[in-house]
Amino acid sequence: MGKSGSFFFMSHDHEFMIKTMTTGDFNAFKKLFRAYFDHINMYENSLISRIYGVYSVKMGEAEPVYLMLQGNCKKCKEKDKYVKRVFDLKGSMVKRMVPGEYHKNSAVLKDKNFLAMKKEESVMLFDKSDIKNIV
Image 1 (cartoon, rainbow, N blue to C red):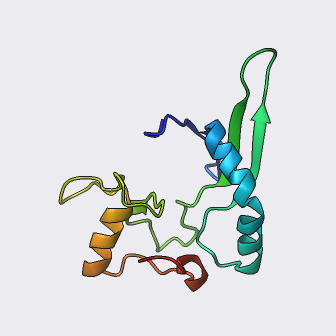
Image 2: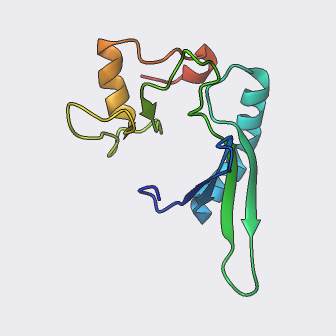
Image 3: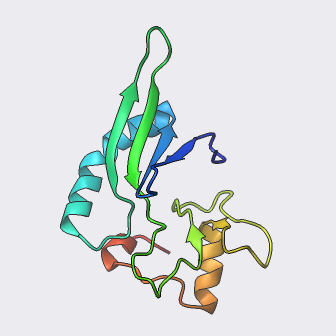
């Protein structure tokens, strides 16, 4: 479970991930879907996660559960490459730091960690289209 309370499920082959969404997340995604879709189609090398579907599942009288199906972006296809660090970047600075100087390779770091690390080392190669608004 993530800090937001969302649950994550991986497919058996780790190619896909299903994440539960809040009603607010679901409604926000519906508003930005067109811009997201246009961006992903225009920039095929974009590093933004590929979202393959967003669903509302309702059973009987229960409140609907919202689900997002996306590709797993933590996989490396080349045998001589590996994921050195993982970041959950949201574009916010509010509560976006994992404290501490040293982190395990499996730690999911946040926006402020990324900004601090990029000053010291080459952290990631971005597709320029994905970083129009990065400070």
